[in-house]
Every structure is written in structure tokens, then in C-alpha cells.
Image (cartoon, rainbow, N blue to C red; front, side, top):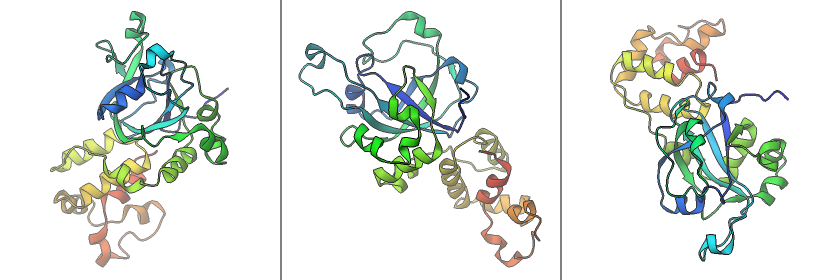
Length: 252
């Protein structure tokens, strides 16, 4: 079966292997996640994902007084690096670590929304026709990660109900020169639209935006790309932002 690479990912978690409830309770912001070998060339900074917890098979003594987790979505994350090799063993919440896993690739991630106390449970996922079109997020998968359909991701964010807060947590590195703007475009060329939007707004509101406008001679890159007159609204060109440029030059 051919799996479409979307730039969105579902990260699967088995609580008996990695106690995600204990991890999320620490409110850790940055971490890494193990991915599948064949996917390593597809992960890029600025992509987004969901943490999907499966059936909790921990025994009573393993839970140590905690309740079992119900299957569902427990976090929204941003991928902040491309794939890399693991340099050390994972955190203390791993229960079934084997040394051969040191050879498996990982990506660094940032937790944008911790849903430990308000997860989207499997029954809700199954009953939503948009989310339910993604078979992996419904059935689960015996692996670390799989591509996620954009429509399903967007619907999950809508169900959570705090979209603006989630994506405003994205913190791209500051840019104060044109060279840094160009490097940022290259780094995030395969980022999700939500991340590109945040980066565009941050740059738009910074002093460097004036330099970007000068660089493109106040020409609307959208109008130009669609065969229009790029200078037809020259008086309004002060409103041209990197968002226009990014939407044309950076394929998703």
C-alpha cells in the first residue's frame, strides 16, 4: 500500500512500553520521538503531529495507584528537526528499552498542547467522519509513527477548540537580516501551513519586513505567480508580507 506523505504525523504510544502519562505530568516542552527507518527522509522542521495512545495493558503493580489511560489523542506536537541518530538512551519513563533501539532514527519535537487532562478519546475519534477517514489514527499501528491526513489533523485541532493558542506557542528563531530570512525559508520549505503562517506573521511584524519588501521591489509575488499585474496595487504593497512569498516559493 502506498502511503501519502502529508507533512503531518501520528506518533503511536504503548503505555506499557513508555509511560506517557508520567511524562506528560512533568509538562516537559521538548523531547524526541522514535520514528520508522523508511520515514527518516520525510521528516522536516515545522511539520506537525499528534500523540496517539493505544490500549493500556499495564498491570496494577505497574500503575502504582494510577488509573489506566483510555485510548485516544494526548498531545499536539511540532517537529523541530529532521531525522537523526539517537545519541543516548531515552528517559526514565521507558519500561521496555532494548539496546538495538539505539540504532533507530528519532526526531526532536516540541509539545504545543498537552492533553493529559482532556484527551480526545477513541470513541470521539471514531464518531467524527472527518477524523475517521484516517485509518491509522482509528485502528492504531504497531510502530512509532505514520503519516496523518491533513483534514484529520485540522479536525482534531477544531475539536480541541484552542487553535490560536496552540499555534501561537510556535517559536521560530528570530531573524534580523535578509540572509537569515532566506535561510528560514529553506529550513521551513516543507513545514505545515500553520507553522508557515506563524513564521510569516512574526517576520511581518519585525523590522526586517521592510527589507524583505525592498528586496522584492514591492512586487506582489502572488499576483506575479498567477500572471497578474504585480504592481497594480502598488499603494497597498506596504501590506505585502513574507506570507505571500512563502506561499509561492515553499511547497508544502
